[in-house]
Amino acid sequence: MRIDILTVMPQYLKSPLENGIVRIAKEKGLVEIEVHNLHDYGLGRYKQVDDAPFGGGSGMIMKPEPIFACIEKLKAERDYDEVIFMTPDGETLTQSLANECSLKKNLIVLCGHYKGVDERVRQALITKEISIGDYVLSGGELPALVFIDSIVRLIPNAMNDSESALLDSFQTGLLDCAHYTRPADFRGMKVPDVLLSGHHAKIREWQVQNALERTKQRRPDLLDNKNDAKQ
Image 1: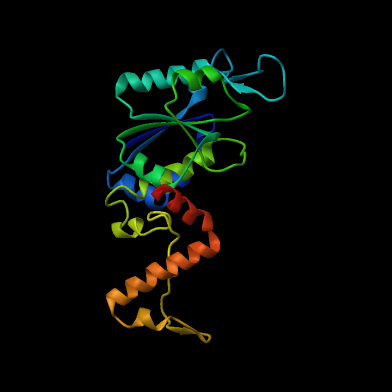
Image 2 (image 1 turned 180 degrees about the horizontal axis):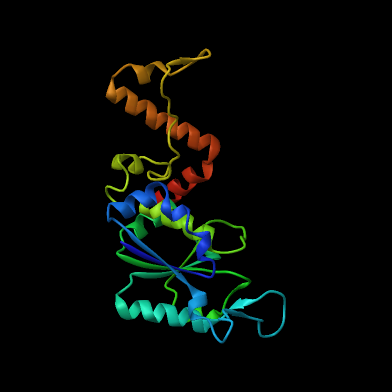
């Protein structure tokens, strides 16, 4: 997989992309991530990337010319499955969406900034718009990092234990079950006996039931969604 990130703040992305599972996946050759500074495509002496909005109002808008120039250059070099814009009014990022995007080969991810981007960018270039929640951040860099981490960890062999990603919360529509490790008794708080039994069928039954109970308590809306899907 190759991911090209377009941003006006490339330094913001440096450390997260050089650590954790993303770094391991890059070292294994499973993913290639390139960060493109839109100021390199800016206009005039000061490499301008933003301007005041037509019609007045506060804030600045990202200009179309630098974004078009960068994306058109990338598209001339290879085909892309999606051109993704990180925006609060996009489709909410879910595990199923992360699963879908993890199967793609080449992605462009545009990080918004300032008040937003010129609408013509969204109309002519963007194929998918993604939000990480109903709130506004100062830029799309953090959402882009969240999105990239969510898909890179799903690439086969990115994690040492690939099965772990398949058992995460939301993969089955439920939250994950509770987890315990040594010691079996910590300050009087004991691990459930079934997890110490070595009986794999009973352990799996407990895990499923525990996941269901936790989902009922913490995210009953997930169960409502599953029921609606069946109808």
